[in-house]
Image (cartoon, rainbow, N blue to C red):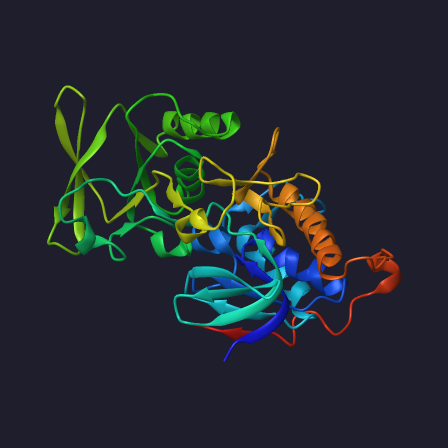
Length: 344
């Protein structure tokens, strides 16, 4: 059976969740699709405990807490979530859209807003023999709970923000070694300074310039990692866990064939409305691109508001929309209740 809704939203990350709220404020029903099993996108999947400092009104907030707040804010409008299955098809149907996921769920919507972050994504894995047997036991590409690594010997591989951030975060509860192929890090300068200061104080081991070469262990539980220089010098670092942070491999998947203008795995949009090259389909958040785009969560929130207002006009041609501020209009229901989820 095909379900009906005003707006179908692809992506349940921060921009997608705020799109739900904006739809609700304009009286538009919505259903949300996401390939991940949990709401929150990368904030939930990759760094739920990582602090974020550039959310208006919050000097510091954990990514997971931000998602919890956005979910509660959206809940008053009773969104339906279809989680754990990627969207596979989008077809026009009598001026509307049929959108289907890998579980065979089809929703007929008057407009579609894509808020899918960087598209479908997965971690870039180091090319180590037998690494699959260690994944989820000794090898990890994300940190769900910081406390899981308390008292352990943790090797962190990578030179970007995730590697540096987690090295700093775990340094007071674990023995941390950071492996990087060069002395320069691609992370926030202030955090790099902290990392090097902890190394100078003997609280973190910087293993530079080295690269991962092999995992030592019984096939599932590691005892250490073998590292090598570009000249071939090797050594073994005792370890209970390896955190490999080499970024994400992002791809648009089926969306690449839906008629959008694509630039580098991103959908080109009108910055004021989020309109794509397909009438009735909009894109917001990291997946959307336009000249001078700033990749910030706050930018995604603003884009969500613009796209929803444009979608309202698309769904109600010729009907005037009198914008009311939430301080005057209020929000129906109690946030945090009336939430329905359809999981994989």
